[in-house]
Amino acid sequence: MKTRGSGPDRPLASLQAGHEFTRRWPWVILAIVSLTVAFPLAAAELRDELKKVPYKIVFESYRDDNWEICQVNADGSRLVNLTKTPKINELYPQVSPDDSKIAFVVDEGEGTNKVRNVYEMNYNGKGRALVARNARYPFWNADGTGVMYVPGEVEEFTIRDYASKGLFTWDVATHRVQPHCNPNIEHLYNLCSTPDGKWIIATVHAGMGCKHGILAIEANGQKVVNLNLPGCRPDVSPDGKKITWGANDFELRVADLDFSGPEPKVVNQRAVVTSQKPVEVYHVDWSPDGRYLAFATGTKSAKKLASPPEFVGVVAEGWHICVADANASNRFVQITTDGVSNKEPDWVPIVKGKR
Image (cartoon, rainbow, N blue to C red; front, side):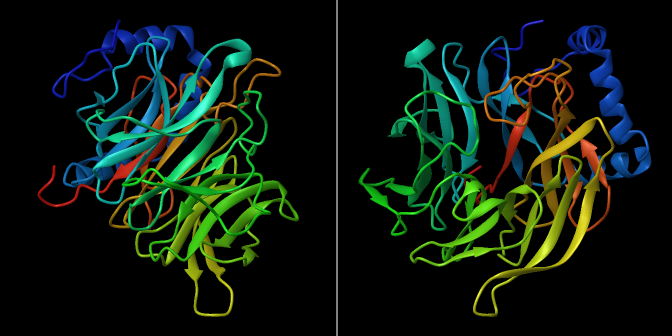
């Protein structure tokens, strides 16, 4: 059943599509059920609670052989395709602090001419502007005046998440590009800014003196601090006091982020979502009020040597978006139902009076 062209009052998923997906991918369905069946009452209560939450969630989704950016209410209602571009692959949406714009990446070209580029656009999908060619992992600076990104490390197209070299800021008003003052930045992915704009928090792999870890990088200085956390893909809470990340493929954690000393540190770690093999949990993101976490969940491909499904732009059959209570343990609910590679969620702030 085609999903393209669904309007705001017409959900993209259908019962018929769900039955077809279950027939084709029964092992995926069983895996997802194993993640949620133990907590049916908590999930039902949380879904009712989320109906009152004013925020929305955007995410990448592979629909009709094309990557799109979609939006859904916090409780999973009113799923809308924001981009509706059958020949353009939009991925990795990041909403600006004032909810007016979205930064994202586009995989363009074919074969040896394929390249991953960074764009930004108005939230309604109009007014697109190229930010940088051969670049990845855009995120907004603290005041929303610039899109920050990491350039590709090599000219050849790659889905490898840490294939980056450097850090730059593209000014939204002037389109001027400013490099970070630290020339040794490399192999970063899934970056974000602290609310005060003083630090960049990112995953590093095989670079900057680290085998793998989460770093705090001064936004306007040379200091780099290893936060000594297992795992990857961090996100900082809107008040700057907490951090969440994937400790491994099967556990999401939350901790306090302490900036009171000479260097930032992380204390009081706790698990907020714990899964069991083969169901993975990834791409965790704070809600604007700091009460909830959106994340993606699914299984690795059954095919040997397949690309990791958690990577940007890799088709991940059976992956869904979920929302968890950030102050509880394993209190979460799955909010998408079609399993069409729904990944990389980002909350929409919903500035009062705008939407």
